[in-house]
Image (cartoon, rainbow, N blue to C red; front, top):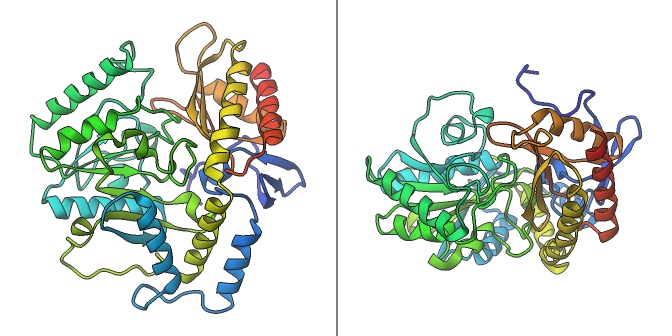
Length: 415
């Protein structure tokens, strides 16, 4: 395996199985999972409805490719198109969020005839050559080479940067002015791609309405808006089914990318776009593994479970309780700079005690201490990796939220 393959923990864990919100290591240790395979195990580990659907589909046919009709793929596409909020929507399935980003960039650049793209500072959109080329996070961008010209816009981080001191309305106005200035300096871009809540960036976000204000400026110039919903989609934020809905005053995005949670661990990604954008490609294309019968069966069962059990509502209720509990826990910890997020997508940014300086070392120590206490969490950040990322399966119970908060409290106090 390559040296650059990242692993968590000084002594990496081999996970052997899971159930509900828990996983087990090879040594038999049981952990409460507050990261879900990077927000991928969305409903629960070993969810019976999903495992049954996968087993039954595997007993019929596992693979065919998009060269043949695939009923589960059509059914899932119809459901996602209806849920997307995008009028006259078309859906193309991929195998990952990275590939979804590539597809969205291909569509936008072909439709607009431009290889220029706007992206947000502190952003992350995948690990392919084109995706790292628009990633505004140095830690995850190994090369400056790119098939696209990328211009970076302010606004993805509310509490740091040159506009942090402004109130929300003034912050949005300053970011819009920055966007307008960028647009006046070169060729008109094909699209703006933005995460409503930045995932790898440490679960940072702008004030509600920023992307609606951006959209007014962009739409006047024909620039498309791509909402990266790989981590924010499917109700994780609690208040909305999609992250873009916190910025809906100017309408839905032109394109929407998704992945991770919809497959509950199966490899599903995809793009939703207006028909005229999706159909603008003038060459043949297929997907060998995107939309496979096996993954589509899992996605259908998982989406059905999510909707029938109102897991968005659970994310709102239990996530709200967890957020308040964590704020209470962190109020007396001098190395905590900020507790942020919404629903079951929460971040704790750590700093050097008594300063505003980020502390990646402290974040790493808390990550290890939480593991020792039986809790798995993530970490992230922009210029550094100083934010703890908390994103349990959306079926999290109140008792499990309290248990996790208690373990985190001890980890923060001991690290």
